[in-house]
Image 1 (tube, rainbow, N blue to C red):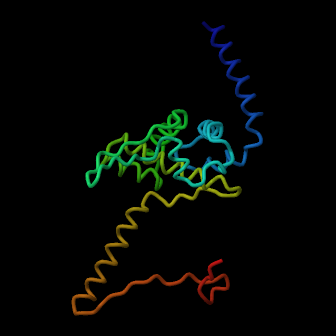
Image 2: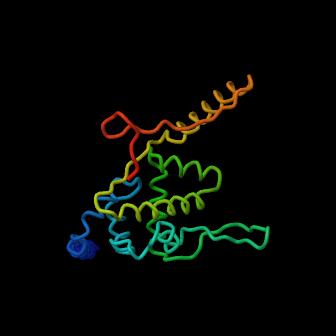
Image 3: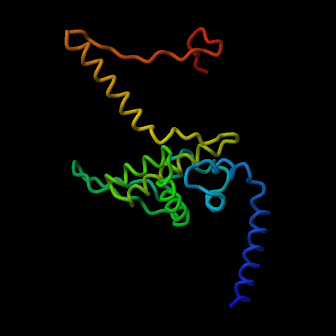
Length: 200
C-alpha cells in the first residue's frame, strides 16, 4: 500500500511539472484570477484550460456565461412565463464554478454576501448558478492584460440599502411641504481637481 501511495505521489508530481510548463505562458491570466474570492491556483488553471486565455471568441460576458451553462433560459409562451432554468452547457467549467461558488459563499466579501443573500431567498443551487454566471462575466473582463479584481467589501449591500433609505427619507421630507425634488449626481472632478471629468 505504501508503494502504491509513492507511485501515485510520483505521478502527481510529474503531472504538476508538466502542467506548470504548459501554463507558463499564461501566468498573467492565473495572477488575474488569484484575487477572486473562492478561487485558487488549481481552479484558475482548470478555467484557463477550458476557456483559453483569449476571449475574442466570446463577444461579451453573457456569451461566455451561456457557453458555460450558467445563463438562465427564458421559458415563455405569450404572457405566460414558466420557471427559468439554467441552460445546458459545457460541464467542465460548470464543475469548477460550482466549487468556487460554494467557497466564495464562505468568504467575507461582496461576492460572498451576494451568494448568501441569494441562497437564503432562492436556495443554494440557484445561488451557485447565479454566482457562476457573474464569475464568467468577470472572467471575460479580466481577460484584458493588467486588469485586476477589486472587492467592494462584505457590507456593500448594507451601504447601498442605507444610502437608498437616506435618499428616500430626505426626499420625502422635502416633498411633504409641496416641494418637487429632483436628484442628480455631482460630476466627478477632473484630473486637476478643478472641473468635471471629461468623457474620452
